[in-house]
Structure formats: C-alpha cells, structure tokens
Length: 269
Image (cartoon, rainbow, N blue to C red; front, side):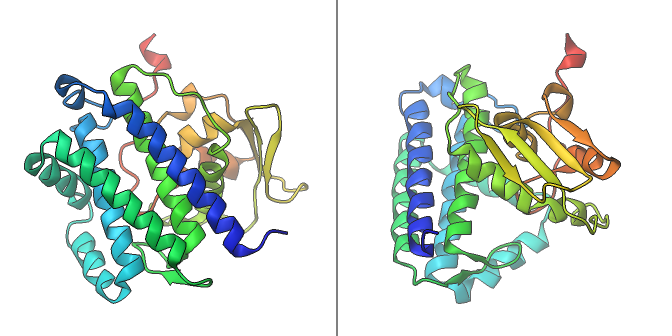
C-alpha cells in the first residue's frame, strides 16, 4: 500500500493537470466567450473562474493561517444562500479577465505549493468537517472539474473524460451522508454498493459486495450526478433499493447548500 505522502502527491499531480486542462480552455477565449452564460444561473465563464480563484484563496488560508479560517466560516453562515454568488460577482466586477486569469494561475500554484509542504497528518479547517491534505486536494479537483464542465458547456467544447474522474466519484461516495444532512434527512445506517464502469472498461467499486442498496452505471455519469451538473433522468445510472434510489435524487459531492441542480433535458426533446 502506498504511503500517505505518495497518495497526496499523486492527487496533487492530478489536480494540477485538471487545472491546466481548464486553463487551456479559457486562455484562448474571446471577451465575448468570457461573458458567455453558463448552465449555472447568473454565472458567466468569468464567474466560474472567479469562483475557483476565490476558493483556492480561502483554501490557502486554511493551510497557511488555520487560526483565521473561523472568520471565513462566519461569513458563510451569515449569508449561506448567497455568499458564494456574491464572492464570484465581486471578483468579476473588480478584475478584467486578463488579470483574473493571471490571479487564478498564481493562486492555484501557491495552493499547490502549500499543500505539498504541509506536514503529514495535517488537518485543515473547512466549511464542513476538517480534512486531510489529500482530501483537500481531492475537493479542489472535484470543484475544478465541475466548474470546468460548466465552462465547456458554455463554450460548446467537448472534454475527453480522464482517469481523474475516480477522485470525483470517491468524494461523491464519501459525501453520501452529507447529502441527506443538508436536507434535514436521516442518512441510511447501512452502506451502499457503488459499481461504476471506467473509461477503459475497468470497474471502480465502493462499498461491500453484499450490500442490498446498489448504484451502477458509467463513471462519468456518476460524476455529473454528484457534482449536480446533470439531472439523473439524463444519465445511465441504475439504483437497486429505495434508499439508493433516493440518494440518486439528492447526491452531492460538495459542502454547503444543494442548490437547484440541473433540470432534465429529456423532457425538452
């Protein structure tokens, strides 16, 4: 079994690659494309990058100034439904896109450096429970991929799925109980079995083999579901058992309120 430092380094390498792929998508975008609306209501391409820049900044605070992070949580609790939108909007209003792109690049590089330098066993404060360095890197990768999907959709670009999706799926599975909690529901007491078909025909598996509640389907579809980038009706995911079926309605891989999610597209056809 690889040691924790090797696992962390591997996740950070994948995070860097995910960020670089999104960077290539926006670096050559025109001013009109930066202002293009994305599937997230009220958010342009610029808002998506501004959000990633802002989140990298607060993540850096969690790593380098953990004693200051409770103030960030207080800001969120004061405006739980609007603080994310407000933060992105303020950045877009303040920064020209060239400077926004430069700051995002600098911010994510600084976060990478800080996470790689964090001592083994470090626990980082966050808006949910504290997390380890590898978990923080995984969360940043998940967000980068999810907001990158919004950018790709806005620009009409096709992104080839990569093996990095396994990180998104993993955090989606681990966040199962949080999805119930943010809706005031009691999570099931028993584990689920999740079997996902990967890009090369491999199976990505979570949970005990004999679990009665099961979810199966493509890895990409599961990642789109747990990041709430697609409605379950548009995805080839199958649930066995009422609890697993309910989970597919509410699954989310991120902390905070669930939001409205995406409307189904099949009904539009």
